[in-house]
Image (cartoon, rainbow, N blue to C red; front, side, top):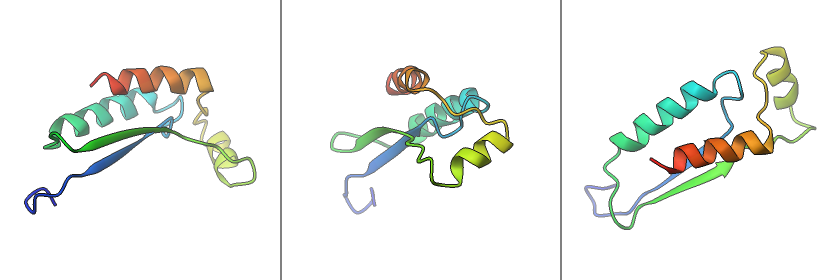
Length: 84
């Protein structure tokens, strides 16, 4: 896409790794963002994970001891990641 002169948009999902994988999620996200050939006109969106109670995610997160991040923890993770 970049070779064709198109701008790109990247979406980072805050909180996806839960508490268990938060440090890895943050490290790997920063590494990825720093490796991308982003330039003027490209966009990076930071969206917080929305956990819907009626989906399978809450049970899977509990079974794997993932530890769903609180709103405050997601906000803090967003600040870390947006500072890249």
